[in-house]
Image 1: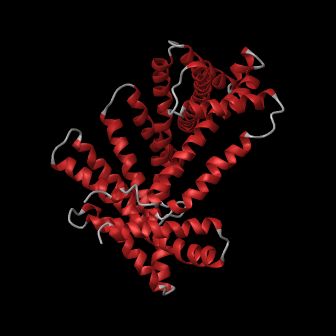
Image 2: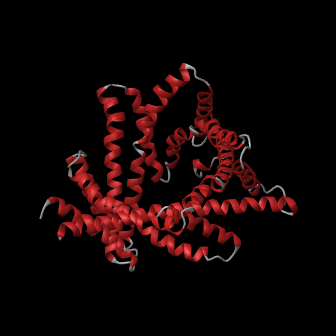
Image 3: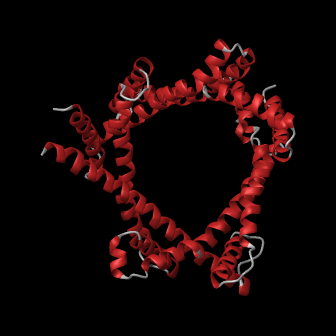
Length: 200
Length: 208
């Protein structure tokens, strides 16, 4: 048996273990599920060590002698006090350091999510499609405005927003299903071509 | 000390970030961002990973200790975690190592299969949710079917106009609804960020 076939058989075994859940919950699926979590966690830990800890903590402090970075390293260790009842408050320091970024989120959020979207929505209405997009955007926004009762003519206009959203959710759902189906096709192709194809 | 200093770090640091977003000054762009924030963020963030490791380890240890339902499977978690760590720390992470072999032949097939499994559950959930019981549900169902059919050869065989209709759905009503939602989300996230920046929202600091 070649090494490639052995590797594919291992992949096929775990693929079938996960697929076995379609029949019902069983020990093979449970074991594979826990192994997936364990391997993913191990992968994340090893990669964080190699790609973040070694170049940005170990090498900068020990080799480049940038001793000031001992402070954020100690601050990072304070995260672990989250598990202590008495000293859990110490973990607020690294959390506060990372939360500083909300200052950037205010102007950046206004720019990316509000101003750019508004600019794109307020182009000259030259076609029917642009008119439909403009009306739809206003109607969807007003649908989430609860300071005025959704009744009368206003209620009917706001209701248009609901229809727009239903079409949008349907389109998103369709795209998500097709993405999952393509993954499913990929797994079946793997089993048929890469495993059973070689076995034949 | 326990809450005031972290709160001050967020407020003062946050205000510096606001200035960073507006000003191209050397002190903000180079000294604050490149020389201070990035190295400090990288140095402190690597320890955040340990939080996840300790948390999951504690959860599974407790499960085994208490003989909780399905406790035996926690040994599979520990076994696979330890083997991956040993393979990565001892054998290295280069291509061809045991670590990468495990990633390519165990982790990747399992995670791809796990996601593909969702296709079945989404289909059955959709059947339950989308049964055209109201006009809105019907519209959702029709939009989803048109978008799905337009992506497969069968759709073009049913009608050669289907891909164009699908593209119109994506470009016009879908765009309008997503833009409206995004504007709402943007306004909400800016409001929440402002509340944190001004010290009104403090739940991220936890109790006591």
